[in-house]
Each structure stands twice: as structure tokens, then as C-alpha cells.
Length: 236
Image (cartoon, rainbow, N blue to C red; front, side):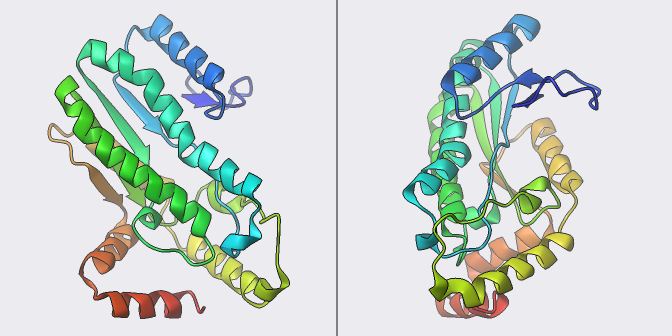
């Protein structure tokens, strides 16, 4: 496993390698260490990411917008670029990118997070077609809300605007309730194991009943009905 704070790994039953996906040198050092210790890389799971507490898209500065893309999207690009030469040499490998159903759906007052996941979806599906000729597959894992620290450690928008005050707190409470009722991380972990052990890989997998339900709504519901459902469910 990897962590930005690998030195504080005594609570785990496995070794952690220090890694910051926002730093290309850190990424390369981590990959080199894995190769030195294990000789190969069979699976890469890109799971690093963060979200911003509900806020209007214009309530985040350009610096904050760039930061969320730097981790949620470009962090994946850095990791992928680092492992692909190894996997090509092996003529095998699996890259699993942890996305979100918000990579398929619009998310009012969560535009930057949703946009970063939309970017990840397009990148992953395109890359999957490119590297199949090299014996490599790329799959997306798409959960809905999950009980992880992502929902707890939400970054506050850094350029708040009073015009949105009346709805920001309401949506934050809505999100907290949804997270409290959400799937345990084990649901996502089981999906990951299923994909790893499956002889036939697909380009994307939903994780959990809620994610599957939302994906089907997006796929089959008429645009006008889907638009109305989003407005009602978020109480916008």
C-alpha cells in the first residue's frame, strides 16, 4: 500500500510506501521501490482524491479548482504514466481507477468534483482501448456515497458568495445524511476483488445498489424527468 504518511503505518498489517500523487518525483520513487522489492506490478488502484463541501462552482478560486484536478485527475495520470512501461514490458497488468457515479451524473453545488470524475471517466475509457494491445486493461469503479474520510474531510470553498448562503448549509446537511446511510467501504473493496479475479474485464463497474440505481436512471430516464429528479432530490 501507499500513503503520504507512510512512516505512521504501525496500525496496518502490511508495509506502506510513501507516495504523494501530486509530486512526480514521489510517484517515480514509489514505483521504483515496488519494482525493487517485488519485481513487477500486476494491479494499480488509483484511489487518491478529495472533495469540496457543497458550494457553487464560482465559490472556488482557480487555485482550488486546479488543486482538485491535480489530485483527482492528474494524480491518476502521473501514476498511470509511471506504471505503464512496467506493465508493457510484462505484457500484462490491470489499472483500476476509483471514480464515482458523479462521473456520469451532474452534481449541482459539486461541479468541480463531478468535473474531475467526468475527466477521469473519459481518460480511463480511452486509455483502456489504447493499451489492450499491450495485454493491459483499465477499468473504472463507480461507487455512490461511501462511509470514508472523503465525506468527513471536506474542503470548504475558499471564495464563498452570500447569494448561495441559503442553500449551501442545506445541501451540506443533505450530504451528511446521505453519507450516514451510505455503503460501507467493504462494498467497494469486494467490487475491486471481483474485478481483479474476473477473467473477462469490463471498462466500468458500479459498486453498490445506490450507484447501480443512479446509473440506470441516467441511462434510461428521459432528460427532462432526470433533470426534475435531481432538483427534487437535492431540494435545490
